[in-house]
Image 1: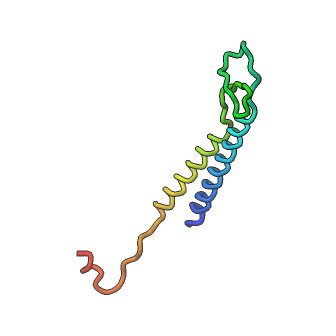
Image 2 (image 1 turned 60 degrees about the vertical axis):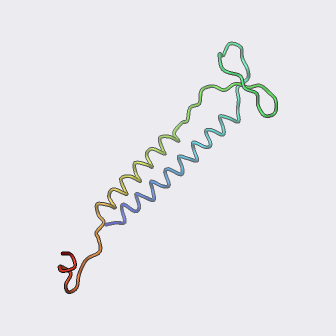
Image 3 (image 1 turned 120 degrees about the vertical axis):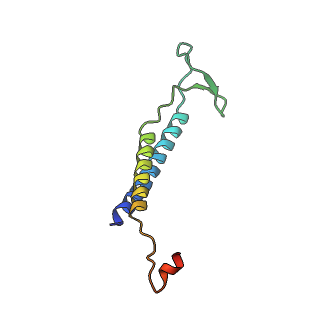
Length: 101
């Protein structure tokens, strides 16, 4: 019965890692391809490390944030199920009631 929540936990971690990779790729692609400077675009102009000028359109993160959120929900749900299904260590043997009181 505990295999399903553990599988959900693994899937949640995997989805979060994939989402982080997608988001990192989107940021790298965004910063690696500046737009040509245009006086009519109304965008701020930045100086690149190599000395050239460039401007950037607004950043759109894409599906990375959605994947990270979905993975977080999966991880939370699996941890909740594991907490519900968890059974404490059984107390047995002689005199266990006297140790409780």
